[in-house]
Length: 276
Image (tube, rainbow, N blue to C red; front, side, top):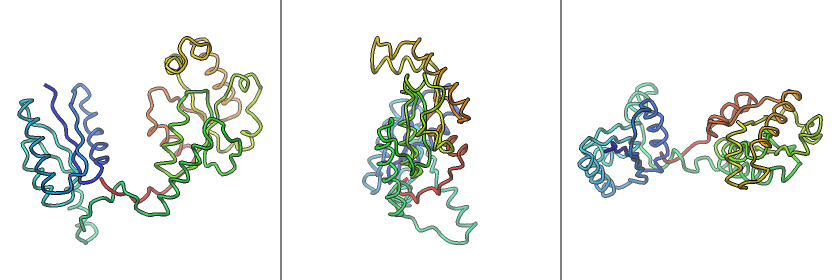
């Protein structure tokens, strides 16, 4: 039986799951059954969660692992008494922070991924709308863009733009280099006038072919020959134009976004967040 891992929170459980996943990757040869338990924000829900955890431990024969970000003392206590190895990801740090700043905490549910600062939240929504209206070259008016991703079709531009918009509030546009573009000696003029904002995404041709095959099976568009031509031509054009580029092959949108922001010097304050 796989060991069961629970991500428990009185909020969305995004923080618990993200931090827990990061820790579990250090044990790559093991497999886990993973369950997220968000909005455990009452003693009754906490007791129900503890019972679920106990049943999983009994079923597998080994103690479940629990990554928790609960902040209410009563709820935290109930979860901690379950038949499992419980790791409260906040408790240790909160105690140390209290010592460091000389002020006690004021436990509050729902801050880590909530709306927080309304202005910051609205900026993120505006950036998301911008990414959608400037996706795949829909609009060539990119004066307001913070960054413009360029690459062949299906190289990961859209999800990366949306991630940067939602997480950082950046106005990210993207443009797909078509076969017609690649036959030209340089990038389209409307892109060249924003050269400092350009960043290229490339991808392994074999991987690109598999992605395109899902969209258009047995097409020239998805053929390995066509993918190789487009990737090689796009990489050569971006190099000639002095545009930095990254491969999306095997990289998450989180990693791509972080590397792009670092390369372009795009530092934005993290939004005040809400529920953990």
